[in-house]
Amino acid sequence: MRVSPLSDGDLIAVRRSPLLSGLEEADLVAVLEGATARFFQTETWLFGAGDPADRLFIVVNGAVRLFILKPDGEETIIEVVGADASFAEAAIFSPATFPVNAVAMAGTRLVGIAASSVLRALRDNSAIGLRMLTSLGRWEARLMTELRRLKALPPAQRLAWYLLGLTTTTHGAIKVLLPFRKSVIASRIGMTPESFSRALVRLRRLGIESRGQLVEIGDVAALREFCRSRVAPR
Image (tube, rainbow, N blue to C red; front, side):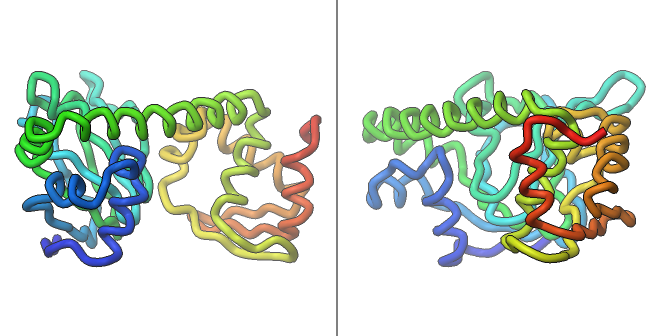
């Protein structure tokens, strides 16, 4: 893990985050006082449920897995937080402990913002809180609309949309690397690992082949057309 001051790229991610995108420059400077960036070369534990909530985070790139542990030690994934999104923001306003566990995946870069800086900025200017809530509310409304649309689709189409989101290519064949374990991706798009595997099998008829984390898409245009269709192939 490497800790460093914020770079220009970090600040771009911060300004794009739903939580802070509505802040004016002076307010953003106040909120970011003492903020640092960390890069994780390997999967790293960030905090556990019940730990003091002394900061919130913004993902610059990579992803963070938020989860709870069952009594048998099995993980139940709550959310996978990707680039430009924030997490742990609610914890700093509540009883000051994190309610879940968090693990940064390999290759992730995070901006950590001290809770004390955020709370001090809010005390100095109450309008900051209103701007933050307004920005976050708009983003959550868009997210809920997208989730409802996605979960209304058959599993194979959900997976197809996810795969298309990993590339900007519009035609021809391409190989994409899954950014997370398949079980994590399955949870993120509202599927069980078993239904994820069945969806991959169904997509083989569209030229989709999976070898570990590498997925080969035979025809991106055909996959996109399938996503727009009303009936998934049998």
